[in-house]
Structures are given as C-alpha cells and as structure tokens.
Amino acid sequence: MNTIQIKTKSKEYQVFLGEGVSHNIPLFLTEHFPQLTKIMIITDELVAKIHLDSLLQKLKKWDPIVFITPSGEQAKTFEVYYQALSAALENHLDRKSLILSFGGGAVGDLSGFVAATFMRGISFIQIPTTILAHDSAVGGKVAINHPLGKNMVGAFYQPEAVFYDLAWLSTLPPEEIRSGFAEVIKHALIHDQEFYEWLIASIESLDSITAQQLSYFLMKGIEIKNVFVSEDEKEHGVRAFLNFGHTLGHAIEAEMGYGNFTHGEAVLIGMIFALKLSEEVVGLSFNHEKFVSWIEKLGYVVKLPNQLSAQRLISWMKQDKKSIDQSVRFVLLEEIGEPILKEIDDSLLIESLNQF
Ligand SMILES: NC(=O)c1ccc[n+]([C@@H]2O[C@H](COP(=O)([O-])OP(=O)(O)OC[C@H]3O[C@@H](n4cnc5c(N)ncnc54)[C@H](O)[C@@H]3O)[C@@H](O)[C@H]2O)c1
Image: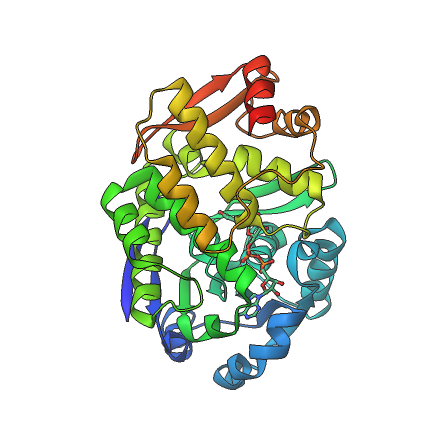
C-alpha cells in the first residue's frame, strides 16, 4: 500500500492507494469517528451493481444508508443533489454522520457538495473507482452542474481520507480507462518531464496496463496534484494550471452534450490544442507528431469532432471560470513542466480552431 499525505491550508489527509486498501476502512472509521451516528454511501447505479455488495460487507457493523444516483454526469444535477439531501434528512443524518462517496468523479463531486452543504458541512470520505478520480477525489473541489455551465455550483471542501482500492478499477470499460489516463498525461505535461517520458516510453496500449504501472502512474498523478493544491487550495494562482486542456475540453463536452464524450477524452483534444497554441504563442519546443501518434495508438480521438463550430466553442470558453471580462485565458506550456496562464484574443482563437 502507498500512502500519500495531502496538505492543504484547510486540512491534511491521507490517500491510501493499492490493491485491497478498502479492507482498512472499518479500522479507520473506528479510530477516527468514535461518535459516528450514521453512514450514507452515495454511489451510482452502475458501480452499485458491480461493487456495492462488497463495500457493504465491510461496513455491516454500521448498517449504512445507500443513496444511488444515475451513472455519469446525470449524477451532478440539482434534482439529484436535492434528492440526496432529502435522503439524508429523511434518514436522520446529523452533524456526526459521515458520507462515503463510492464511484468516479461525478459521484465524488456530488457527494462532496452534499457533504459540504448538509447542515453546513459534515465529514466525507472518497472511495474512488475510476482512474480519472485520482484527480477528482483529491484536492477538495466539489460541485454540481448548472444547465448553463459545468461545475458552476460548488465549494472547496476536503475529504477526511481517500481509499483508492485498485481492485475496483478492474471493471472499467476502455473509454473510461482512456478518460482517466488523459488526466495522468495532463499531470505529467504540466509538472514533470521525466514522468512524461516514462509514460510515452512505457504505456504502449491501454489494454495491457500492469498493476505496477497503474499504481505508479496514479501515485505520481496524485503527488503532482498535491503540489498544486498544497500551494493554492482555492485556485487564486498555480492551481489554475491543473486546468490544462480543460478550457477547450469543457467547451467540447458542453457542445457535444454532457455524457456523449468522456471528460478525459475531451480534455485530451483540449491538450493537443493547447500544446499547438503553446508552440505558436510561447515558443514551446515539443515533438508534437510523436505525442499525437502515441495518443492515436492509445485509441484517442485527436481532432475536433466535425460538427462543432469555432464560434460556439468560443462562447462556451468565455463562460470558463478562468475567463475574466469575456476574454479567454488558456493554460499553455513554455516547456514541458512549465505552465503559464495566457489570454488569447478571439481572432487568434478562431484562426487556430479553424486550422485544428
Ligand atoms: N473535483 C475535481 O477536482 C475534478 C477533477 C476532474 C474531474 N472532475 C469531474 O469528474 C467527473 C468525471 O469523472 P469520472 O470519469 O470518474 O466520471 P463518472 O463518475 O461519471 O464515471 C464514469 C463512468 O464510469 C462508471 N464507473 C465508475 N467506476 C466504475 C468501475 N469501477 N467499473 C465500471 N464502471 C465504473 C460510472 O458509472 C460512469 O458511467 C466529471 O464530472 C468532472 O467534472 C472533478
């Protein structure tokens, strides 16, 4: 088992990572929550079908309440948020109760926001089940979506711990492996050239990732995330660099309709675009062809879907939380591992998108 200490201004906590770490949850609860009144597990319908029994077995002693959401982005609606709060109230959760978030990033974002707002905040623990959640379960950004924008209603609210049992990940379908691995690539590109070189040399196919490789790249990804959130928990500065690829990525997701394109796959197209812009605007020297041919080999879409118009994508990008006064700000790379934030004017953006 690997343990990573996450340090933010508001809280320090541990990520336990490895095959079988969920067996340690009962002991952790006994030691850290002696006055625990109730547990509410929030999970989605797919994860519930495959893995919930196994988690419930471990938590029998506490007889948890289970709240099941739709799978995917549909978990992050106002309606589901409202229903989760109703379930918490109907089942008499109180300030000594605990929420366990069991699923991917969508369930994690929703559960964290429920925990942050129920009775002005109760404890929660992340039990991630996707590769992507190495990113979303750490750092304390929790949110639901508004029809006018993704993650527009949320909070910074840290979990008490993260139990990342790699055994849960064995049932992920290929598109979700691709989605999560895109965020691993992001972490390497924004912070660690050596890690990026390791990824490109070692991961030749996403169908044959070994347990050792999985554990190594998730650990590296979490450590890199920790570097940014420990310095800047509330995104006044360097934390914004974690949004590399997300400005265009979020616009693609919104324009395609949430859930029709996975988060990471959209972000990956956003990263290819941001790398191109970085070469043109801030002089990044980078072997673009090598990167794109690696990405294609791993099964990613590397171009904008045809039906998307540059103008519509730009109007989505202007709603991005990094944008100020309607000007679009991109995370670009001066070098691999050296991100900066740069305002890009509309004419260059349209030209670059049309060329892309
Ligand atoms: N809070 C943050 O810092 C942060 C960072 C990145 C992304 N996010 C958010 O995370 C979400 C995306 O995360 P995600 O891709 O994990 O999403 P997700 O929770 O929607 O999971 C993706 C799909 O995989 C299924 N699934 C989950 N675990 C499984 C398993 N073990 N086996 C089989 N299927 C499984 C889910 O049911 C779902 O259909 C987005 O909403 C994004 O905004 C948040």
